Image 1 (cartoon, rainbow, N blue to C red):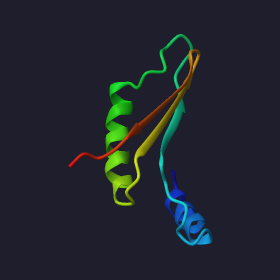
Image 2: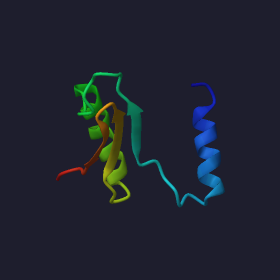
Image 3: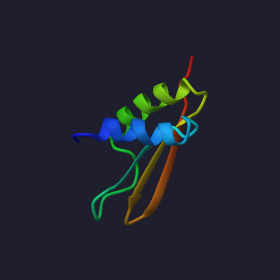
Length: 77
């Protein structure tokens, strides 16, 4: 998305870099489980590596017909 990076940088500056990106959220289509797909797992691994720089876990929220699935991932090693 054009301009997204500048928007995020501007918002981080307004909170004096105290609030950071923590993860992804999305919904799954009707009649599909809320368990993470292989694509979701890859994204969560990348997020966990990035958030480990701040000693935080990565976060994924998936919403679907079955409710909400919350997944935390931490970088190991």
